[in-house]
Image (tube, rainbow, N blue to C red):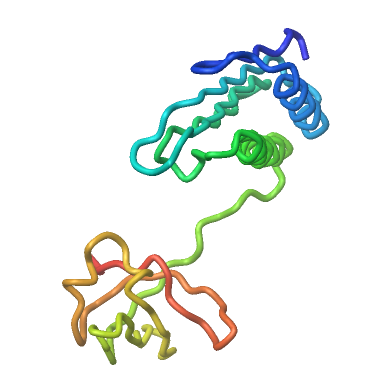
Amino acid sequence: METEPQIVFHGMDASPAVTAEIHGKIGKLEQVHQRITSCRVIVEKRTARGNKGQIYQVAVEAEVPGGMIIVNRKPGDLGAHEDLHVAIRDSFNAARRQLDEHVRKMKGVDVKSHPERHHGRVVRLFADEGYGFIKSSGGLEVYFQRDSVVGSDWQRIGLDTDLEFSLMDGDKGPFAVNVSLRG
């Protein structure tokens, strides 16, 4: 690394043990990408509302040729933790995933593409139970559920509603995800 990593503590005193743990995590990031030019880690402790005690958040910012890796989890996010070590682990795991993706993009290795979108009509709907079936334009009957519907479209879905969706393979066959009203 070209510059010494910066580790900043907010709402708590700097701890040699935590600082050493973070330096170890930075070292592991450097194994993924040897050309990290700078890294800044912000460790913050806040008092949580409600029944919880302290909440920790850890932000990681790493500069690499061709981009920036930024993991910034705020309290209330899934990344906010009561355990400081879990917060450090999760933030650095997220940074590693971003670095892996950045390396793949730089090498031109196949990056995730968006799944193909399909069209169909609702042929059976069990609204109270939260699921239904779509008959695709290709004749395939596909299961979908309320949780797979984008936004608040579930309330607007009825029999013969035109839908757009992506297909996933499940244990019981294909099912629809990212379901939305067509057009």
